[in-house]
Amino acid sequence: MFNYGMTYREAVNAANPYRVREERELADFIARSRQEAERDRTAYFQPDCSSEGAYTRSSTAYREDLVRMLGWPLCGMAEQRETPEAVAAHVAREALCDIWRLEIAAARGLTLYGLLFLPPSSGPHHLVVVQHGGSGTPEWCAGFNGESNYNGFIARCLQQGRAVFAPQLYLWAPEHGTQKDRAGRDSQLKQLGGSLAALEIFKLRRGIDYLLSRPDIIGEKLVMAGLSYGGFYTLFTAAVDLRIKGALVSCFVNDRFRYDWPDWTWFNAGRTLLDAEIAALICPRPLFLELGSEDELFGADTGVREAEKIGQWYARLGCQGRFRTKVFQGMHEFDKEDDGLQFLLGLQDG
Image: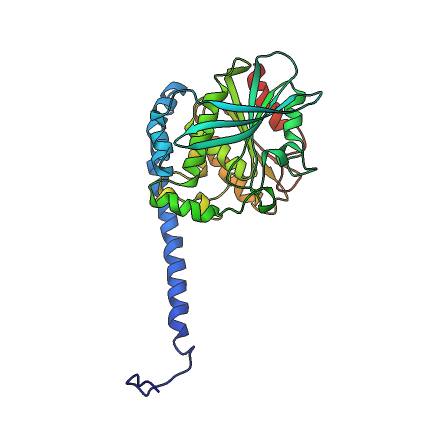
């Protein structure tokens, strides 16, 4: 038997109290540091509220910080402003719309796939970008595969005469395509100075470049809506892209210290930009937040508290009517009632 040079022996758990203390110390240290981060974030995020114009101008630096935080290739998008090409394949014709599959060449060898729904009239049409959530697809969001927690949102938009684009994110379940490794791909991109969120927002913005170039789309009043992960991408894309004139974020905005999932965590975000500050980069553009009272993933209580922080910026600018929070009776889903949808479509009708 190998001689380790010592004869002393003890139970394997003899030193466990030291490790228990280390865990407790680390938890206490992070809790104290998060309290400090709240103060740091408040001191950092101070846009000029003297007027809407001043607010928007002073938000530019924070928007640039957000883009840098998310990383490449989003921070290099200024290099890719030419209109991308797209391949369209007709899928079906229904009473509400014609359905097309689009493959948009986003640049850098990347393609954005999605479904485009066009009303039967000649147009041009107002456009709603509708973003699916985790384990989702445009087809699932549209109801091609049966009932879902999207509650017919795309059809409800079409019934109001809107065109809809439903993009695919790197979020599908295994039965909807090849196996994927979201966490691994995110890590690989972070090693390169980027993130999966940055890449997907880059692709979404390139999709918008293409869609707004179409003669059958009205570009001036583009709006976006998303559920869950789709709410995340709606929030962040609208914060970054001023062409989005209004947003509906369902079942996402919340306390990011409570829900600190790796997908939504970036270096030093807790001291600079979390959900309330990112939403404030949408202000003074209209924003509607939905929170499910029985949401099984994200608590409505902390969501309401984060929404109150957002509402303060609209109030300071005197445009409270452009921000609304609704806690609806439901779970992790789009609200079955049309309050949020009518809020969005009213922007296009006004």
